[in-house]
Image: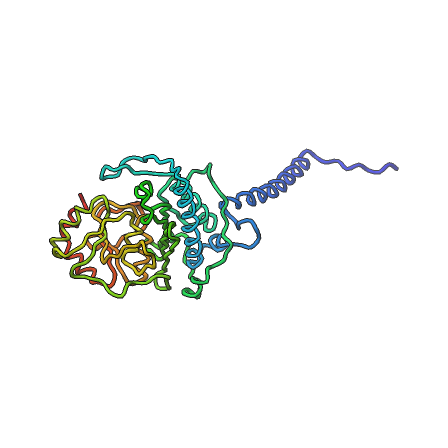
Length: 359
């Protein structure tokens, strides 16, 4: 007797085909996920060990790891800033006008530093919000991996991890602070900065000076590699202000503190904050107060705010309000920064400056 043949009904053929398509779909989607992880869009970074992305995908990030990556990002960005400046080919252009009517300049140093800093942080922590001064072009995307090494000076000050929900974190990047001075080759004012805010409050800050290769960092309630100076002059302070409107501050400051008050015009918010601290950099001027009287962007001040806060200092609007690092990218009320002084008493001394700051 001849063997019986197996006959499939049309319904059976359809079911078999659907099962085959399902298998192919799962295999292909797994392949795509692996490809996307190379670009920090999900999963672990390539190269073996799971990085901070693993914890980010679990809903939390470690602030100590974020500090280590932020320091590395500021240094890597600073390398680009220094390389471009030393090449003397800046490709300088204007992004438009500031509110004061000055050119808002941008150079290759800004763009290349931004690219290094943004993609290093984004690859390491894909689930956190990152705000940066310069536009990020997807066509210039880079895969920049962190080796998961936490520097010894950070481990010494911060012995244990600190996990927070990834959704509570906002990162602020300034890839080149003091661009105007950078174009004028006034190198001492130039910094790169990273700040991490949790629920709008600045908790860690990094300020790096590319041309002296000095880096200051701090985490609120945990530790820092920089400290306040031994003393400050509250009666006749040295006040560091923006080069672009030093006269505006000088008039009110002399009325408030007397004729012995010294005004120090300087570029860059990062430089001005470091002027309040004990910084081992011979090019760094020293001041007792930092006052700004016009609109300012949050990526300019967040890192300095975090460092001052970690050291017991203060940075507020001129009316004494705390600055929230969520929402809009700028503040209207000017700012006052101090350390080891009665900050609220200083706020009360400067009512005229508050009005000026809102013009």
